[in-house]
Length: 115
Image (cartoon, rainbow, N blue to C red):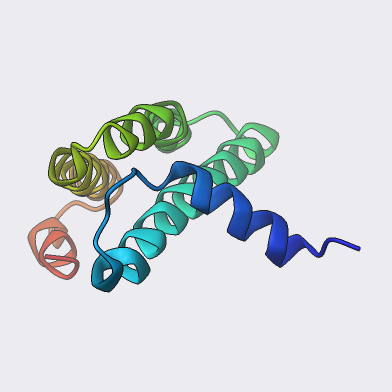
């Protein structure tokens, strides 16, 4: 019987580009897992936010879910650095905009915490 962990491992292995050095394999598998987890978490946030009220935060998080296939495609196409940089900049931009929208005075400190 196949467990969910084995299915997830198979999915991650499919998304790893060919020719990744053995010593980088664990790091690259973790990156794919982070993209998948980010897409699922942002999709869950969008669903919950649509139940409560539609706000700008839900639309911004929807962009992470919609952009995740692009990041996975870039990663699979051996543009691993571009995938990582774009994903990090995307998430930082969303954090910055959400912070600007929902706080008035302390937005700079809140934005600098993840940086």
